[in-house]
Amino acid sequence: MLSTNTRARIPYGRQTIGDDDVAAVVDVLRGEWLTTGPTVARFEDALCCVTDAKHAIAFANGTAALHASMWAAGIGAGDRVVTSPLSFAASATCATYVGATPAFVDIDSRTLNLDPKLVGACDALVAVHYAGLPVDLAAVPTRPRVIVEDAAHALGARTPDGPVGNCARSDMCVFSFHPVKAITTGEGGAVTTNSDEYAQRLRQFRSHGIVPRPDAAGEGGWYYEVETLGYNYRITDVQCALGVSQLAKLSRFITRRHELAERYHALLADLPVQLPPAAPAGSRHGHHIFPVRVPERRRVYDDMQAAGIGVQVHYVPIYRHPLYRDLALSCSDFPETERAYRGLLSLPLYPSLTDEEQDRVVDTLRAALHA
Ligand SMILES: *Cc1c(COP(=O)(O)O)cnc(C)c1O
Image 1 (tube, helix red, strand yellow):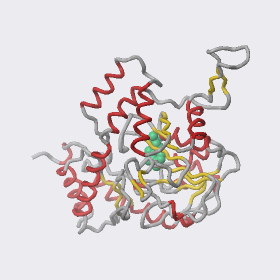
Image 2 (cartoon, helix red, strand yellow):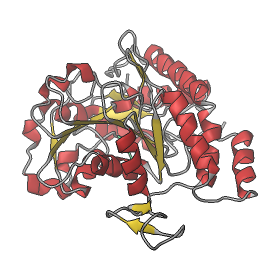
Image 3 (cartoon, protein in one colour):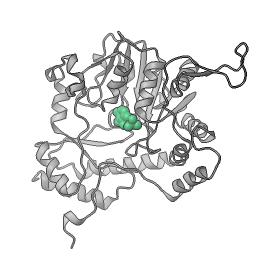
Image 4 (cartoon, helix red, strand yellow):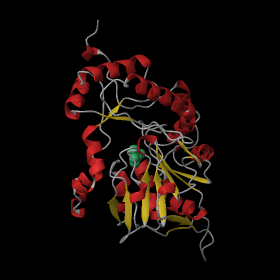
């Protein structure tokens, strides 16, 4: 019998790549276009189909897409942008990139999302759908000027208003296609929106702030102008070939994530761990991660890592990062976030995780908890 240490490591998340994905990428490599060509447009069309949004604009990564959403909405110096402290830093740095000031409200201990009732006066809200559970945007007391959903965890999730990404209660919705997310393009991201104006600004920002001006007086077909400060935030046709192929499998991926989440709920029922909430009736969870809350988190983390189970903590609360020390925020202002952070541990969850591997995760957790 193999000892635990020689068995394959199980990560907390990973991509699921099939031969069809490989063939799709090879096809594009043999073709005419490598960077922004017809496959970027095909991927954007496919994203519109999945989300029911009018426009989808694909980016080099999710962080670039968040940055672009802030700029497109005209958020800048002097603006206050509220987000969840229990998120990846990019949910806040997107505000900092454009000169705005991030602010945080405490989480709802039940959903682990920011508590929508606490969202006070602000210029923009970056609403993170933590773990893939959609934030209840209907519960925000007063709609801020701009609402951007950070749906990096929530491609394939639904609310009573329809698919996440349809922007029913937001201006823009941002996705990430990093390998641990619902689908991957290697690195990649996108913004969906129903606004023609935002769509045009997002495309301009993605490509150096350039606007073609072939009709400018005395000029010709070559002529363009750099109208604003943009970036090279483009994604490639090669990446989008993978994206189109992956997106066709999204519902299968999410179905498997749901099966695994249900299995975790059954297998962990008798252990002293707090399980993550299910989606309310009429909604569909994205199940990007499976964050449980455990006692003695440090020891459980170390024991599981030593046994080859790549558990992770989502997240170090953003106000704790030295980047934001000037905001002079105190952990004591976010009691629910701190309470959750102390116990959080994400267990492996990805479509190709087998039942046997999941059993090994649960057995290892049981041993670590001495339960
Ligand atoms: C992954 C992630 C991002 C950033 O996406 P990248 O594609 O890695 O830049 C932003 N917000 C959240 C909540 C994420 O999980």
